[in-house]
Image 1: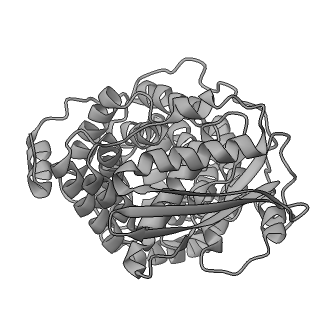
Image 2: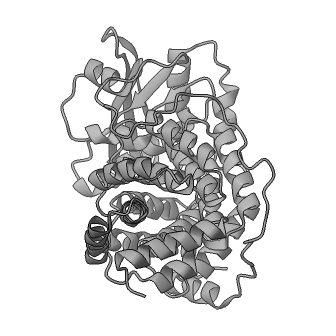
Length: 449
């Protein structure tokens, strides 16, 4: 069945989501440990020092140059690189820098050895993509960022319809060049053809840069483009997962439509039924299930599977941080947020993780630390609503009411439709006592009812 973009929203919005908030649910092992890594507790600690090299082979994939002569093909080149990063990330033997940090070098002439130092990696992959009609040519070179020597260079050419095979060939070649002892079966098992329709995949690639803008207009474009992709291929779960997540996040940002929470939860459940082995789809779905459906055990299991499939995903660890925070596991959440920032040390969306750390410290009633992390989050991403709210609650709890009221005014200037009524409606917290304290603090600061 082919469903039009607007019809999909309308149809799904009419269906009863069928979930009940699990306010009284008690999770087992509420603070389950995760793999140990250093947790920085001081929000004012310097971030200028280069990170140390990981013990495993480490790599950053820089944005490939668009050689097509058509600026409109930029999204295509960026999308292919993102898929190559995802493929490499799923090789457990590698440490792979996240897309957002790699893409801070886009359009810049850089010294690859300096890139290696700044990101804390041994290898850097760069290249170019030329698309002419239905033909695609991908050229890549792998550089040892310590010595500056070229480790590997190659060129791959084929039809657009073979684009997934070309991505696999690039990824396999890099794996083989960096560590020949790695069994390539790992990357072969990580292959996933997300859709049989190249036109639907093209729409998804167009949606990604708009998603990363974190603007109302960008979110509206993502909604439209994922709807169009689903009208071509209703079984394209990656587009469905992104569509669900954009609706859920729109609620947090006050950019939502009336049925967004209901539609997001239903779409996320469909993703869970269809995409058991795609870590990106599972990560999107887990966050929606925690935030919009408030089904915390399901969300925790889903995000754990996502990270099992792709342990190198910075966005996966950020998502895990929020799922754990919503599930009243702030200590575990903080660890995942720090892990995300190590995997993506110069991420332009670092504010999302910083805000999550601040929120987790609010839950721990460590208000000075919450304020420090919240202010740092606002500095990184002033347009992320959660960071404003972290700062407001921390200031109220520290009895700095004049500053809290000023912070509330800044929140309302950025998000004029935000109200206490809306916050009560969407409160994603398992800990209902914390949820009440959260709303109460916002009200004391002057957020309108």
